[in-house]
Image (cartoon, rainbow, N blue to C red):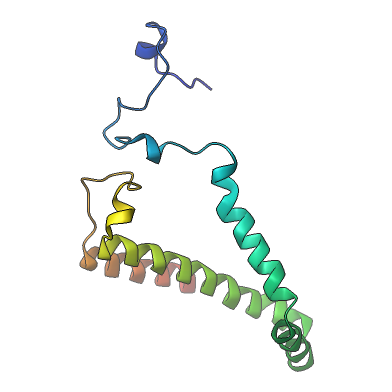
Length: 133
């Protein structure tokens, strides 16, 4: 796969991403190095920490006592993954709607904005897709 467009390759220049309106800032393209692994490592560390707590152990005992393995695998995995999906998405949606100053430099499309009405529409479509399909 080619990493430089033909017009940049023949000039001997490295592709900077400036040829695309959606890649206006280098910070939106800086997806290299250990810095990009920080969120993943953080989530893994948090998961390990939570699973070692007494509350988690009690939850697992309660779960195994009250539900069959099929119910745990079929329903509880759906509930937990759906909750994680929605919590993460709603956090990013709130950041996009509130527009705090720190977040503006990380927007991939800084000149574009999504309205609350559009977010409501998208949320209903996602709920429908999760329930129906």
